[in-house]
Length: 424
Image (cartoon, rainbow, N blue to C red; front, side, top):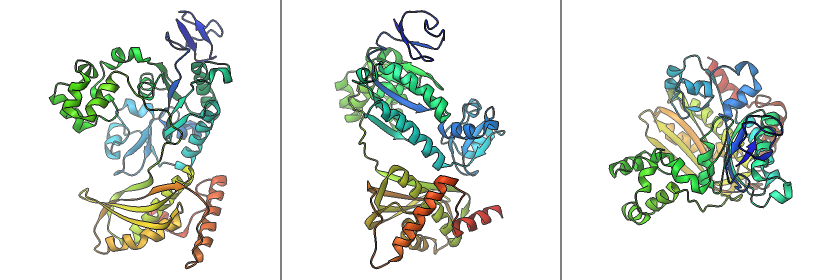
């Protein structure tokens, strides 16, 4: 049976315990290893891994990336996970589970930089790369063996070592014939893993898994399925596609297909991003309009940073507020020209926020998002407000300085005032 050596990328036709080329024991064996070509790449504990890369003193310590006692865990390292910490867990629960954890505020600029480096490495191997988030994506290596003179599996093993040595983090790889099975494979051997699921393996490997392991099966749908006796993926194997479609409509067809390892979606580099946003949960409810305005600036800056990273601008700007009793409120404004500038987002939503804070309602969260996205072009020149061009040029200069010297190299007066309030 063909085996891939993950330390030298050699594929050997042998059942040996060690690589005949370099002696490594890190081998992956599968009968279809040389021909499978669709892979899912998942960065291991991405934000926390970047923080540990940049501060070696954190290497053997539990690290949580998130913010505030009322915020949530963005991600955490595997040491923290051993203590029961999970992504999206409220921070107070995470710190109860792992009181020794070191909490670090997210730094999306350096995370985005690492993500760009990884994307570039993927695109060097194939034009068919689809990033689905900052830390994971798909690559289709069909037809690249002749160009690179190596099978897809060998290319992926080399990729993993290059990312580890040059970017400074580890990845887990799932290899299959379609996106769904590649994604499922990448979850089998984490961290720093490499797993293979061929379509003919799907029922045996997926069968013991809970039904909510299938993407798209959320808590409500899983509860409904459980009432029908469908708790494991193997339970789906006992039903016909027609029966599931009759019971659950299109969701039933999706369920049957995925349970049998069927996924006809292509790896699409042109997948459309629908929105870009950022939000912040406060440690304590805020009713002070001036302080909320300062917080508005913070999320405008973060949303703008993400939009610039993705090269998009949006026509629709949306303000999100959440009250202390978790009631969400959204207000949207449609612009005459798309923007990705923090100044424009702030000036657009500042009066909207003022109307909502006039009653001094306490809020626990604020967020800003842009949608109706288009590729970013030149900054719009407004004849009614000539200052737009100057503000845009100033913001671009700040972005350039921060990119060269770090996020704290240049701060606005509003950001400095907010920092001073936090310290006091």
